[in-house]
Amino acid sequence: MTQTQSTPSTPASSRCPVANIQWEGPAREALAGHRMLDEARRSNPIVRVEEGIGFFLIAGHEEALQVAQDAETFPQSLKMLSTGEYSPFELVPETLNGPMHTKWRRVLGSYFSPGRIEKWDARIRARANDLIDTFIDRGRCDFTADFALRYPTGIFLEFMGLPLGQLEDLLKWETAILHPDYAQGPAAIAGMHAAQAAVTQYFVEVIAPRRAMTRDQRPAGLVTEALEWKIDGEPVSDTDLLSFYLLMFMAGLDTVTAELGYGFLHLATHPADRQRLVDRPELIANATEELLRLYPIVNTPREAARDTEIAGCPVLKGEMIVISYPSAGRDESSYPDALTADFERVDLSHLTFGAGPHRCLGSHLARHELTIAYQEWHKRIPEYWLDERVACTEAAGGMMTLNSLPLQWKR
Image (cartoon, rainbow, N blue to C red; front, top):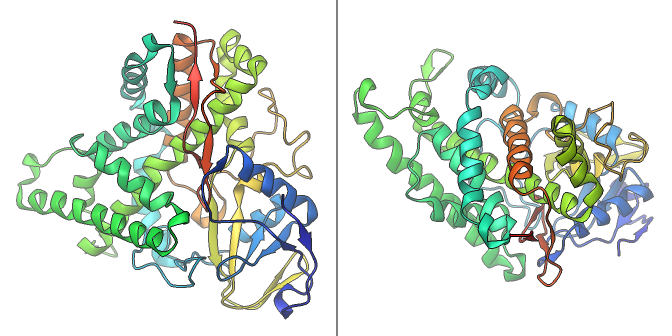
């Protein structure tokens, strides 16, 4: 259970409650992380977490919005919360700040526009149905392993213009980077860096032959198109391209996987909500937004660029702040009946994709993938439930996701 207490231990935490929570650790019961954050938020919109190097957790909706929008005071950071070391891998443009970040987003904007994403509709639906075909006759599946992990991965590879041949390696690297086994201690961090290096090397081996090809020989896809990008009239370096590809790999594979897991866990354990989507499929777009609000999965680190204050809590220059979108989306002071899924909720605004200059560029693609998954699944498997004989667990850490989701249905 999360407990909070006031502490005068340092000037920065003297007016900020300390939340005794385990941030990084072994697998835990599904939804334990969201419940932990709910409890912390109810004590104060900002709490101090003393694990690792120590950081401030922004749990309230309005406070999260304030910090997210103020990228000058709270720029993105590569500092690791467990050790205080800076990651050797930059993620372009996510970890860039200031004018260079803006220039990169201008280059990328058209690739993730709603109009461009709409053109992927048929291919995304085909991907969903191809996967459902592989297990529908069994009457059961591990939704995480059999669908949620593989659905966005195939779309990502096609979007980027990459072959499917190394799919299993990509899934293994994704898990090591975004959901390390913290029970292994320092070996988990070493494994994370090794996987990041493996992904980078994978892209080195992809782009080298493409650069040697003539333009009409190169495969279609974002990897190829990026070879021609320019910033301030200068070609983008291979170093920056590799950092961008690494970011795309992490964002493109994990966010939709995690959101699908929590969304389908909710529907499997709330049969009235599930039946509502079956009976009224026109609600699915709204339901996608409501499930995004109710089950955000990203906790974003920032580093204070100057001494400041958040909700009466002093924060010193150089201290780490984590914006907890999984808490902000469930803030009772911002949403009526915040912990209840209301598929007809009128106010659909939420912070699940962030806010301010670092708001997620891929939000349109993610929404489209999620909505199509809910639509196609419920056409073919309208009634399903959680297999309570099998453990349903989630990973701890900054990116929340289900390790497993055992579902059953009538064959």
